Amino acid sequence: MPKFIKSCFKSTFHTRVLAAIGVLPLALYGTAVRAQTVTVEQAQPQVQVQAVEQSEDHVSIGIGGGYIPAYAGADKYRAIPIPAIDVKWGRLYANLYNGIGVDVVGTEHVTVGAGITIMPGYRRQDAPRGIGSLSDAAGGRVFVALKEDGLIATLGATQGFSGGTKGLAANASLIYPVVVTQRLVLIPSIATTWANAKYNNRFYGVDTEQSLASGLPQFRPGSGFKDASFFVTASYSLTDRVNLNVLGGVTTVLGDVANSPLVFHKTQPLGFVSLSYRFAP
Image (cartoon, rainbow, N blue to C red; front, side, top):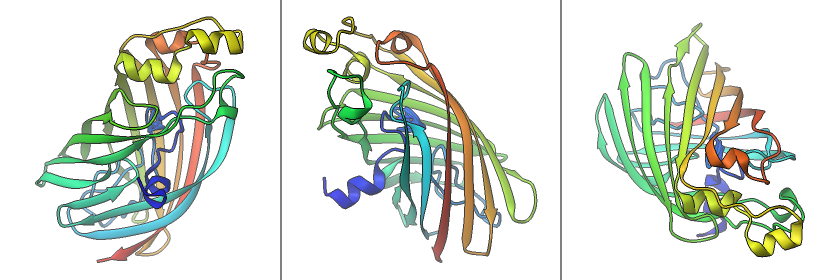
């Protein structure tokens, strides 16, 4: 995958957190969490934990930064720059949560999409000595987002097909944007990530060679829920096209993963800030 695509669509967390968040990515972890833009005037606001596209075509570009764990459960934190990108043009989309893809279904209440995204690993220096690094992977992602009375529920799954992470990670989230003033929107969100044994073992397992090199006990996690997170994003419209977004939250490692020798802190705070400009329409 070209480097410019990889740099733009890497999850906020190098575990993935939000996701990324797991997740961060996000995920945060395995997931992530991702930077986004929110305009009060839009019927369907976009949120940080997952980019639920607005119905009209738009291009939002910006820059931000985050202070996050090197991976979910890591003993180290990293301050990293994060691009803020959200593109919706016809059925095509590109954002920091769902990657690059196409909306197969796009109605007022239901969005179904499929595309390609990044499943981040971690650097050698972020893991205990002797564990080594875990290279990023490309993954195929599908998701469905349901929108009703301001509530947005999303269920998605990403299957790695190249690189070191691989495995399958599925995430669910629930968000409810609250318009406080004409310029300020608060977006509370909750999310969780489930991963299969291959994904969890690649991320949190310790094999015989790693055990000998690090002095840590061998560990092989199974499949199951790997994290849960809670975030609140504040999005402030500085102008009709410029938005300032600030996110704070916590994520907690769950299940077998929580018992891994690579997990030093089960619950960790994190934060992001971004500034974005909406070019179109």
